[in-house]
Amino acid sequence: MERISRILSHQKYREHLKKIEVWEKDRVFCKHDKKHFLDVARIAYILYLEEMSSHDSKYDTKAKVKELLYAAGLLHDIGRWKEYEEGIEHHLASVQLAEPILKDCSFSPEETEQILSIIKTHRKEVQEEKESLSSIFYRADKLSRECFWCPAEKECNWKKEKKNFRIQG
Image (cartoon, rainbow, N blue to C red):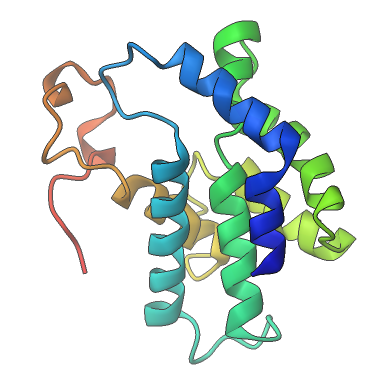
Protein backbone atom coordinates (compact mmCIF):
# COMPACT_ATOMS: atom_id res chain seq x y z
CA MET A 1 0.00 0.00 0.00
CA GLU A 2 2.63 2.41 -1.17
CA ARG A 3 0.11 5.11 -2.05
CA ILE A 4 -1.36 4.98 1.45
CA SER A 5 2.12 5.58 2.84
CA ARG A 6 2.41 8.56 0.51
CA ILE A 7 -0.81 10.03 1.93
CA LEU A 8 0.51 9.63 5.47
CA SER A 9 3.73 11.45 4.63
CA HIS A 10 2.14 14.08 2.35
CA GLN A 11 2.98 17.60 3.59
CA LYS A 12 -0.55 18.98 3.11
CA TYR A 13 -2.10 15.95 4.81
CA ARG A 14 0.13 16.50 7.84
CA GLU A 15 -0.73 20.21 7.88
CA HIS A 16 -4.46 19.41 7.88
CA LEU A 17 -4.00 16.93 10.74
CA LYS A 18 -2.09 19.50 12.75
CA LYS A 19 -4.87 22.09 12.27
CA ILE A 20 -7.48 19.58 13.46
CA GLU A 21 -5.31 18.71 16.46
CA VAL A 22 -5.07 22.39 17.45
CA TRP A 23 -8.83 22.89 17.13
CA GLU A 24 -9.61 19.71 19.09
CA LYS A 25 -6.95 19.92 21.81
CA ASP A 26 -9.58 20.53 24.52
CA ARG A 27 -12.38 18.50 22.92
CA VAL A 28 -14.01 16.01 25.33
CA PHE A 29 -15.87 14.15 22.59
CA CYS A 30 -14.44 11.84 19.93
CA LYS A 31 -11.46 13.33 18.18
CA HIS A 32 -10.77 13.34 14.45
CA ASP A 33 -7.23 12.05 14.49
CA LYS A 34 -5.08 9.36 12.88
CA LYS A 35 -6.42 6.74 15.28
CA HIS A 36 -10.00 7.45 14.21
CA PHE A 37 -9.00 7.53 10.54
CA LEU A 38 -7.23 4.17 10.74
CA ASP A 39 -9.99 2.60 12.84
CA VAL A 40 -12.57 3.56 10.20
CA ALA A 41 -10.39 2.19 7.39
CA ARG A 42 -9.75 -1.11 9.17
CA ILE A 43 -13.38 -1.63 10.17
CA ALA A 44 -14.56 -0.75 6.64
CA TYR A 45 -12.19 -3.31 5.14
CA ILE A 46 -13.30 -5.99 7.62
CA LEU A 47 -16.95 -5.28 6.76
CA TYR A 48 -16.09 -5.49 3.06
CA LEU A 49 -14.37 -8.85 3.56
CA GLU A 50 -17.26 -10.22 5.63
CA GLU A 51 -20.13 -8.90 3.53
CA MET A 52 -19.11 -8.19 -0.03
CA SER A 53 -15.84 -9.70 -1.16
CA SER A 54 -17.19 -13.10 -2.18
CA HIS A 55 -19.84 -11.72 -4.56
CA ASP A 56 -18.42 -8.35 -5.60
CA SER A 57 -17.12 -8.16 -9.15
CA LYS A 58 -16.95 -4.34 -9.45
CA TYR A 59 -13.38 -4.21 -8.16
CA ASP A 60 -10.24 -5.79 -9.54
CA THR A 61 -8.86 -7.19 -6.32
CA LYS A 62 -9.30 -7.14 -2.58
CA ALA A 63 -6.02 -5.22 -2.41
CA LYS A 64 -7.49 -2.45 -4.56
CA VAL A 65 -10.59 -2.20 -2.36
CA LYS A 66 -8.35 -2.13 0.70
CA GLU A 67 -6.40 0.77 -0.75
CA LEU A 68 -9.57 2.68 -1.68
CA LEU A 69 -11.01 2.23 1.82
CA TYR A 70 -7.75 3.19 3.54
CA ALA A 71 -7.42 6.31 1.39
CA ALA A 72 -11.02 7.27 2.21
CA GLY A 73 -10.41 6.48 5.88
CA LEU A 74 -7.36 8.69 6.10
CA LEU A 75 -9.03 11.57 4.27
CA HIS A 76 -12.72 11.51 5.21
CA ASP A 77 -12.51 13.99 8.10
CA ILE A 78 -9.48 15.97 6.96
CA GLY A 79 -11.71 19.01 6.41
CA ARG A 80 -12.77 19.20 10.07
CA TRP A 81 -10.57 22.25 10.67
CA LYS A 82 -12.35 24.10 7.85
CA GLU A 83 -15.68 23.37 9.54
CA TYR A 84 -14.35 24.82 12.80
CA GLU A 85 -12.63 27.75 11.14
CA GLU A 86 -14.91 28.64 8.21
CA GLY A 87 -18.22 26.87 8.87
CA ILE A 88 -17.88 24.65 5.78
CA GLU A 89 -19.43 21.21 6.32
CA HIS A 90 -16.47 18.92 6.89
CA HIS A 91 -17.42 16.24 4.37
CA LEU A 92 -17.47 18.86 1.60
CA ALA A 93 -14.24 20.46 2.81
CA SER A 94 -12.65 17.00 3.02
CA VAL A 95 -13.50 16.33 -0.64
CA GLN A 96 -11.81 19.59 -1.64
CA LEU A 97 -8.70 18.93 0.43
CA ALA A 98 -8.43 15.24 -0.48
CA GLU A 99 -8.51 15.62 -4.27
CA PRO A 100 -5.05 17.18 -4.76
CA ILE A 101 -3.53 14.80 -2.20
CA LEU A 102 -4.93 11.80 -4.08
CA LYS A 103 -3.56 13.17 -7.34
CA ASP A 104 -0.13 13.73 -5.79
CA CYS A 105 -0.20 10.16 -4.46
CA SER A 106 -0.84 8.68 -7.94
CA PHE A 107 -4.47 7.65 -7.62
CA SER A 108 -6.13 7.44 -11.04
CA PRO A 109 -9.05 9.75 -11.89
CA GLU A 110 -11.45 6.79 -11.51
CA GLU A 111 -10.03 5.80 -8.13
CA THR A 112 -10.08 9.42 -7.00
CA GLU A 113 -13.73 9.69 -8.00
CA GLN A 114 -14.60 6.56 -5.99
CA ILE A 115 -12.71 7.76 -2.91
CA LEU A 116 -14.21 11.25 -3.08
CA SER A 117 -17.69 9.76 -3.42
CA ILE A 118 -17.13 7.71 -0.25
CA ILE A 119 -15.88 10.81 1.57
CA LYS A 120 -18.76 12.97 0.34
CA THR A 121 -21.40 10.48 1.51
CA HIS A 122 -19.81 9.31 4.76
CA ARG A 123 -22.18 11.35 6.94
CA LYS A 124 -25.42 9.80 5.77
CA GLU A 125 -26.45 6.24 5.21
CA VAL A 126 -26.73 5.34 1.54
CA GLN A 127 -30.27 3.99 1.23
CA GLU A 128 -30.27 2.89 -2.40
CA GLU A 129 -27.21 0.64 -2.17
CA LYS A 130 -26.91 -1.25 1.10
CA GLU A 131 -24.05 -3.29 -0.35
CA SER A 132 -21.74 -0.54 -1.52
CA LEU A 133 -18.42 0.77 -0.30
CA SER A 134 -20.16 4.01 0.72
CA SER A 135 -22.67 2.11 2.85
CA ILE A 136 -19.93 0.04 4.47
CA PHE A 137 -17.87 3.15 5.11
CA TYR A 138 -20.79 4.96 6.77
CA ARG A 139 -21.26 2.04 9.15
CA ALA A 140 -17.53 1.74 9.81
CA ASP A 141 -17.37 5.42 10.77
CA LYS A 142 -20.09 4.87 13.38
CA LEU A 143 -18.66 1.56 14.60
CA SER A 144 -15.26 3.17 15.14
CA ARG A 145 -16.68 5.30 17.94
CA GLU A 146 -16.39 3.90 21.45
CA CYS A 147 -19.54 5.40 22.93
CA PHE A 148 -19.67 2.49 25.39
CA TRP A 149 -16.40 3.80 27.00
CA CYS A 150 -16.89 7.52 26.55
CA PRO A 151 -17.07 9.60 29.74
CA ALA A 152 -18.78 12.40 27.75
CA GLU A 153 -21.42 10.17 26.12
CA LYS A 154 -24.30 11.75 28.07
CA GLU A 155 -23.36 15.23 26.81
CA CYS A 156 -22.83 14.09 23.20
CA ASN A 157 -25.37 15.46 20.73
CA TRP A 158 -25.29 12.42 18.46
CA LYS A 159 -28.66 10.71 18.16
CA LYS A 160 -28.89 7.55 20.23
CA GLU A 161 -29.35 5.36 17.12
CA LYS A 162 -25.99 6.57 15.73
CA LYS A 163 -24.06 5.88 18.92
CA ASN A 164 -22.04 2.71 19.24
CA PHE A 165 -22.89 1.07 22.57
CA ARG A 166 -21.41 -2.37 21.95
CA ILE A 167 -18.67 -4.15 20.10
CA GLN A 168 -20.16 -5.68 17.00
CA GLY A 169 -18.71 -8.46 14.95
